[in-house]
Length: 94
Image (cartoon, rainbow, N blue to C red; front, side, top):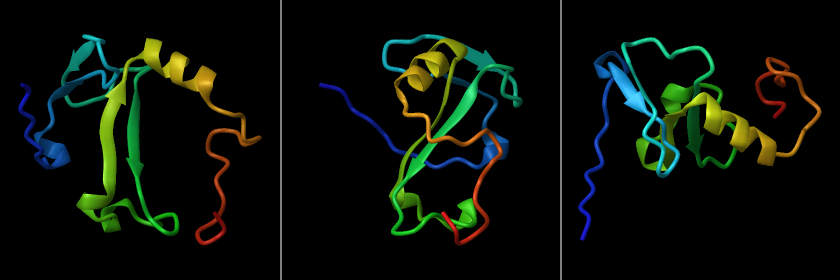
């Protein structure tokens, strides 16, 4: 049997992390995310959140990081939506 504990931490309390990919043991130390790693944050909302601090904690599905290898694997599985990084719609247009 496995026991899991769900906790919420302030960003200032985090000093490193492991890749969220099941079975991966890649990790980093320090407060800054190394180059090539990405944040993986998913949540449910009826409409896109304009401010992440307004997302209710119970609606957050995943909040973690992916190592460069698993960033490539995930990206290879996602559809190209025709947008470049940073090319996001204005607030209320998503």
